[in-house]
Length: 348
Ligand code: ACO
Image 1: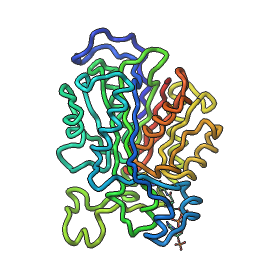
Image 2: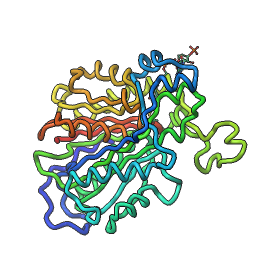
Image 3: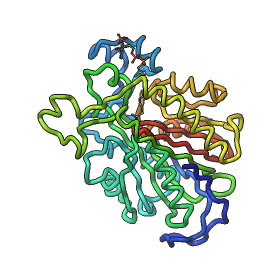
Image 4: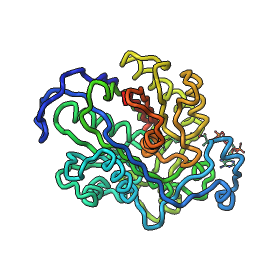
């Protein structure tokens, strides 16, 4: 559903959250990223499965990815990214109202990874929950945070996407294990102003495509058992070609939809941050949308597909190297399992 945000005056003194407070502009006050130090190159993968650096590079654009240490889980990655984002925003953890952790790889099913993060940050005033929307999770989290702040219910929401994809890929399956990597990206959402604000979101789902990308034994349908493990059902299963076609189409459609709702065209976009799954998906969509390549933010070559973390990781790089300037129009588009997709338009 398309959601152009209302253009209403700023709320005053709404901290503590009174439902029904006036809507107000919402922006990102701080961004942080973290990737584990261990680098796995394509050449290392050549020693593990029947593949080659040349095949992986030409089919995906990925040269290397990061792998979490054995004692690192998603909450550890989220903690590091969150601390960077909070420091940049100048926000103390006790001032966070809500923590959302988009992840496909929670530390465990419960307690939520957001609850673990809340404790480790010392975010003593925060509610916390995980968000399950695979690679689309960060934009879904951003839309949720924006809606809650715009309504006046909350002032400060931390969205910390974190993934240990290395724990859910079958390292014997060359068609999937080469694609993914581990990492985290976090953003602090706060009231913005007329010149710096989210302009709109487009969220979509087509559950009929759920079988194209799934982990069959990861919940109540097929509980873990010796048989499920024997069959490798605890790992990602993907119809790569189908997902590829869906991805190119939906990146284009979701981009155009949010731009149109907000009264813009592709030529107005200063920075395009697509989900980092495969450089060929990005290149095909960019060509159809007509963006010039220097306006497209990519890091898939260095991190692979970090699922929900890929967009905030890329946004963090864009901010840190000083490319994005106040007032720039930033378009972000996520897609993934569900099937799901989401786009967001942000005036930085
Ligand atoms: N190394 C060498 N050969 C390989 C490898 C590999 N790592 N993987 C597959 N191949 C082989 C296949 O077996 C096949 O061989 P065959 O012709 O003898 O059967 C051949 O290469 C071609 O395989 P395709 O699957 O047709 O290769 P394609 O060019 O489509 O690339 C890929 C596969 C990279 C997986 C692509 O389909 C893709 O990127 N799909 C989208 C995946 C994606 O984005 N997923 C994430 C979504 S986000 C989320 O929510 C998790």
